[in-house]
Amino acid sequence: MTDYKAYNSRNFKEIPQISRLSDEQQKAIGIVSQVLPFKTNNYVVDELIDWDHFEEDPMFILNFPQKEMLSGYDFSEITNLIDRDAPKSEISRYVNNVRLKMNPHPAGQLEHNIPTLNGEKVQGIQHKYRETMLFFPSQGQTCHAYCTFCFRWPQFTGMGDIKFGMKQADVMVEYLKENPEITDVLITGGDPMIMKAGILGRYINAIIDADLPQIKTIRIGTKSLSFWPYKYLTDDDSQETLDLFKKVSDNGIHLALMAHFNHYRELETEAVENAVERIRQTGAQIRTQSPLMNHINASADVWAKMWRKQVDLGMIPYYMFMARDTGAQDYFGVNMKKSLDIFREAYQQVSGICRTVRGPSMSAGPGKVQVAGITEINNEKLYVLNFIQGRHPDWVNRPFFAKYDPNALWLNDLQPAFGEKEFFFEEEYRKLLKINKLPGRSLSSEDLQSA
Image (cartoon, rainbow, N blue to C red; front, side, top):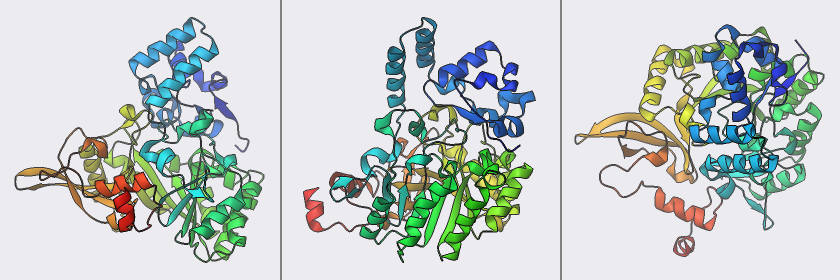
């Protein structure tokens, strides 16, 4: 298979295997995809999904919207609007209200991560952590196929006021020059690898040509290895893409593909094995990450098998995330206690070479917070938490404690331990947000007073 064929909510009934679904199941996909964007392709459909058991198949659930991803009320309301042939404007109004209720930009992405340059907000850049800048090329704000859990689902909805993206490579370079503390550029989306090599090259070459000694790493966040490995094998720009990767390495910049794999099934095709090998031959490194999700990979055995296979292929397990507080979190979310149990049991099954992975981690407003364990102090059961990364660098690697709550799904579900009114970082976090201080910049006494 070398020809890419995409399916979305308008043509998904053209998928040959879709006849296996009942009329009710097909209708549910159409209704949920009014809210959560749907897109798949012939590689996912033909090579990843087990159609003999599709209703419980993790690859099917990963890609095809499920009825339970919406509240029963919203599902019924949208169904009623469609059944009575309501005007498109009325359906769109209701659908957009549902989207806005689903926390479309978690962790302050829209409000607190967009920096300014020359007094203007830079809509295609996020800068939350001191050393790392996220860049959203406008041509890369879609994917070969969409994950139903995706925390960046607003990028694909057509609601322009909640979408990131920019085309100006020169603005990106100017921002890097103005912020010499940035060492890592993360090109993200969507999926940057949806772009042709020539377009991706404009952005990467702009960084190389700018000769910025501070830039040590270029990262590319991508699901392409899982959803379209032919990007690196037989697409008409596959060799040009690999040559671009090699150029980064040859210029002394570390290139890391941050590859999203959610289940070991995605690692079992010949195409993905060959693609990984070709990428590694360019000098690029592949690090892997995924959220932990009910219905897809909430099993220690799945994670252990996935990490082992990734290492066998020469990749580096990097993160186990918790399902973000956005979109269909009620459907996918795994509580902290179970997440920690799954992580520890999976960790115990693999050798030290696989234990590069960190987690379970929440990418919350203040930073990446790891659930490091559960302990008991003075007869009080507690979560042990730790900042892997923080909006302020001083918070990193500082353990802190929260009251044990077996139902907690996210950081904001927790209460501080030992009778404290708030966690150690909260006062400074509020002040950082109030004065919109760039990540890692020191707070002066005047800043603190004004906040």
